[in-house]
Amino acid sequence: MKSSVSIFLDFSRWSAAFLVVLGHAAHFLAAGFDREQDMSIAVGVAYFAISLGHAAVMVFFVISGYLVGGITCNRWMKSGPDVIEYAISRFSRIYTVLVPALIVGYALDAAGMHWLDGHGLYSNVGAYPIGSLDAVEVRLSPLVFIGNLLMMQTVHVTSLGSNGPLWSLAYEWWYYVVFCLALMGALYRGRARIAAVVLLGALAIILPSAMFLWMVIWLLGTATFFLCKSGRLRPHPALAAAIFLATLVSTYQLEALQVIDHTRTTSFLLDLAVAASYCLLLLSVARDDFRFPMERFHRWAAGFSYSMYLFHFPAMLLLVALGNEYAGLPLLTPFSPTVWLRVGLLVAMVYVLGYGFSMLTERYTDEIRRSLRKGVRSFAISRVQGGPEPD
Image 1: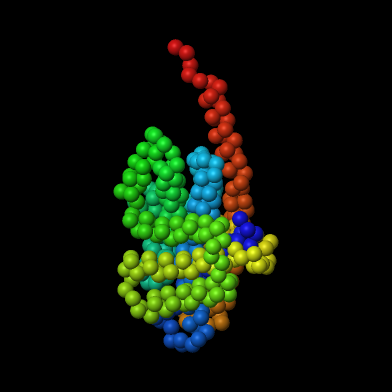
Image 2: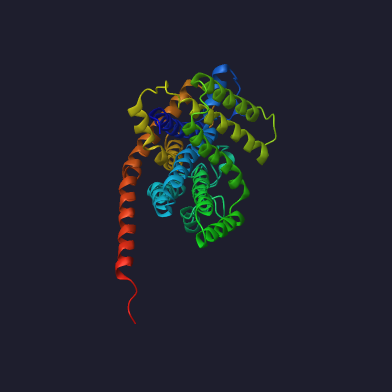
């Protein structure tokens, strides 16, 4: 992979995570678009900035399809399938952070419900039209915890507690599984191919149809990997950036002004437009003359973006509840410099906590991956050397 593409992907990962965190912080503290009195240009730009969280998730899907789908497909076509290595890599990447995030999120939500629910932030969310926030008390149980551990959120259970952003992780996990099974069906022969096809059929029945529809965006990232590799399409970065920005503005206006009905088809088409324009931007940075500044910072910031995504919402809700309960922190107030200051402070506090969380989790991904490889290798050797016991 070209250095310019790698750095740009790191920049995209951390900036997408930041936009998600910023949007959620603003949704807690700033009034909704329909409740705003002063619709100046500055306020309009502010609402545009905090609306980009969902588009950022589409960027995550494209990046995942590019890195996981594209690189895996390319490697398997050259060297043959390696399902065990694929499973180890995906499991270590996801679960090194997910398991602690579920435990910590459960604890934070339970503490908030018990001590900080005087104004109903955890139980009476109808009074707070805050994006991604649902009634925590009905989503916090051992059954929901296990369901999220098994990636069943959005399939058979809700996301755990307040952590609504977990919906996208379930999508991504099952994209890994479906993609692996599809490659196995294409590259294997005999019983392995039959088993892969049967499992794919079972998943087609179990998983929601929307999940497969949005997988088109993930596969778009995979296709972009091979387009980058081929060198056939290299738009100028300035042109690609202009198209990407125009797409973001257009989709924002269509949604904010309620020009279209919010059906599944229209939502998908809007998301697809954002994803396609980002793919064009990704292709543009593969040019030989492209240089991306601040390489070390982008790699550092991207290094804990996954932890931030999984950790931030329960922590943010607890901080807001603390401020609201004991300091009278106002919620959902019109945009002003004071509101922006509060949003900035909330984001900063969540990032400090999230970085600390990543130092105990995501930092050890490679170490856990190596341990899993060693364990699988030792198990395989013991099976070969031991053989069946004689009668």
